[in-house]
Length: 349
Image (cartoon, rainbow, N blue to C red; front, side, top):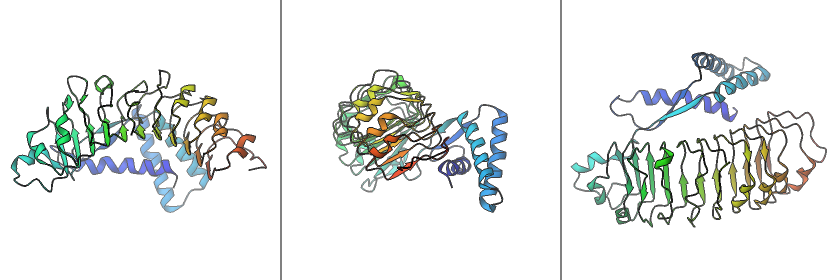
């Protein structure tokens, strides 16, 4: 089963499971499709049903299955998604903390539909994970340092009155902020000095956020499912090793990509990229590069100059040939290049 076929199947199942929860408290997060038209919705349902039957019964030829998946993918490209958020059922709801006498076993807390962090939260000295869901909170206070085991914070659909403020913190290593208005995101993440991972997905960002460039321990930045074009100013991020930019609106990879000089993994999946600056060849530590589902007509020349490259994904582009620079990939072990316009392979492959 191809990766995007599995994605379609998971998408259909997830909303059905979530919808079975009581209307007053839906647990977990699920994505719903917002189709471009009613026709797209009906066509997708019919095509998916036919594809599912074919995969189970093996009644259709591989060529027909490929044709069905191409039609589904064309609908998918016109479809946007909305995420519905609810508290994780594996977490302790903050409301229930008021009724407890013993807090030693509380390691995960969900603060749901609140305007401030509850006072009982500070009694959870063994807290490891905190999530804020559908809240209206303007600050992550310095008092979070009093919870020494707190390492991860997830913020989903926070709707504060002003830009989220991050007070000084030296314990949290992972911060996720999803479905926030861009103007309410923190300007800087420097106060979270221990941060190693930052995710800012689904925030309608149009410009690359530079607020984490001074976080010396930050190795992973995830910016998927935004509206980033990479046309704005991008400052040097010297410490990043993994950068995710899939599902944005990038048409061209600019020369400023060289400013991520320590990158090992770079993901551009599902954008509109047709041009890539040769400066990408400056990423001498890059091991994994992915351009799945873009508009490349050739393998970027700069990509041939990546000495550490182990894997490159070029699935679903418009590539017509593999250039002679292929032999420079002395460490390459995986090349994904199906669903392009190749008619021949070079003899030296």
